[in-house]
Image 1 (cartoon, rainbow, N blue to C red):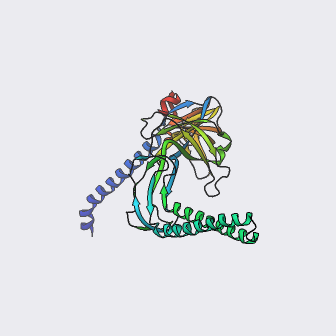
Image 2: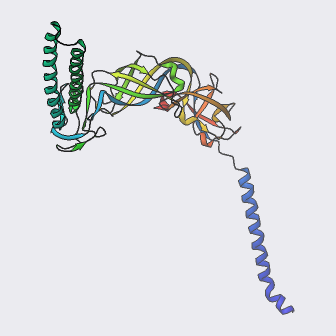
Image 3: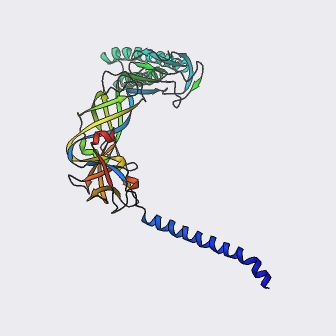
Length: 356
């Protein structure tokens, strides 16, 4: 036993020495970590000052033709003549299509023969009545026959007019959707015609802006092919009822001097006046489940405050509650700030520098 102790004793001593050294190094590391100075976040701020805010409402809209119609026949029948010069301008009253009217013309000829006979009878009875050669009732019956046949002739003329489809106004004809010889009904669309020398704009606005627009107001419109240049438009009408589904208001405006295809997307800008308020960069706001917050620097420490927002501009938001003039709002390094923790202000920036 003494021999074994003598053999393993040196190794045991070395092992104890190593364990003691490791514990000492760990304690020294923990002590060094605790005493290391904490790094203070560096932030940039802007000074919240009330300034003039231009309230410009933006909305999306579409260009619509001043007049547009789907050309359909009034009665059913087979097409015997078709004149649809696709994509070209046609004048009002131009014949677009004719349908088979042979049966109607035959009835018209029949009634015409009967009418001629009835008129001759009336003339003959009139001469006899003047010399009291016939009863007045016989003359009245013959006259009634003439009036009845004239009414029948009027009905046939109206039916014949329905067999011809004409352009209701001057405009651009659309694509042909039927062929010559086809049997069509009043549900069939032959083509479309649109008047695009003057176009209109339909757009929607949230109901909260209902009092910001009036009939006759001038607005600005930007189309895809205007290269960023805005055009003037005049409000023609405002839908009196707000949509119960979208809570939006439909507005129509006239756009003059602009060549654009109906259906083209447009951006609408409405000047709703000017006011004063505090603007801050949109990226300075911390979204929260219950409220919006920003970070202020007070006495060298970060302070989180809740705010309410109003108008939005490009890259900036109006603050309606929560800020006062002179507050230092953190605009960079927001994520590194902690409540009531020290922060270091690197620079004071202007709103234009941060937004742009």
